[in-house]
Length: 478
Image (cartoon, rainbow, N blue to C red; front, side):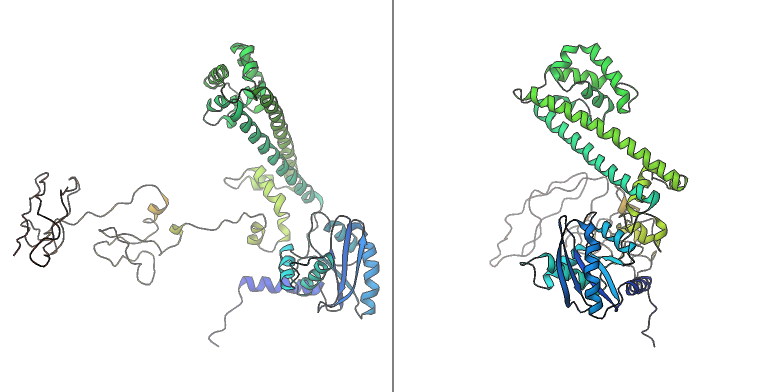
């Protein structure tokens, strides 16, 4: 059979995933769909045809899952099922108590993507009439169709690394918020200080100076020498080693004429000092949590391995592992890097062999090589440059590609006396590379006449001769 093709890797992986889900969502098990919330849990018992066998609202947090199972099991047994399988959305942390108690009782749990629940509500025409029980029914239907997945339970060092990674993200957000707040306040009441460095918020000397005081009046009252000494003492906290005298002099000069909104300056600089404290505190917490993440990498025995990757620090590797989890639970490296979003794809046209385009002497793009093989010569004359990986370097750099030499000058019209044996008839002469472009004082002549012998382009104007180029005579008008 000529049209039979082997299964691809994606086909095999999808079949394996469906086989695992069939072993969990078995036909002899009823489905318990739960719409999780903080104070109420809506539970629905349904069969694999999405027929509701029972529903009930339970008051309490997700830890009432034991009550839900005690209620659902008799209903499933009465309907002829051997047991139940629980399905829910991964709503915040609320799915974790459900997973904990269900596995303790020997009941399997699967999760449904919230986006699929939203799409399912549109399919059921429940978009304008949403309720918890209808969402539970849609969850049960998605589980019956096996549009679900088995949740991953964190344990040991990997669990700690995940929580430390979440803490690191929180500190990064707080640090960025305090930094932006400081910039906004100073831009309003002391704009001159933001011009004292090329990137003031990244300068260690500038950060130490603002930690000493964000009030220009207080800096002036300290005196220059006292201010410089205080900055030197504060500099070590911000990771600096040497004071930048130029920036300090610029800050001192900016304190003499701060500018900005004067009436709000006392209140705004007080708030700016609070922002500096928040920024320093967030950075200290960030350093602490990153040190803890590196300790977890040491406990996992991965510190030496991750540092062998070019361009990746140990902290960056710890942040990626905190999002992705244990690589051993993945059956493919590509799947693992896709989980934290670390799988970049080639987007440059220079990486696709045989698709590059070169240009001919007139600047027009040449046709692609016949059959598409890399290295085949371009069929357009006069360009014969092959399309290779070396020639594609011009697509990824700012340097201009070498252009072929222009053709030799030829006759521009029948009345032109200058000609070249290499020129083709009816072609305008091309200027040499060192010569300037020819300037005409009027539109180029046209030998076509209007009825009655009048020239539609007006009288002939004598062109200006430049750099020894020949002066053309006007066309003879019959």
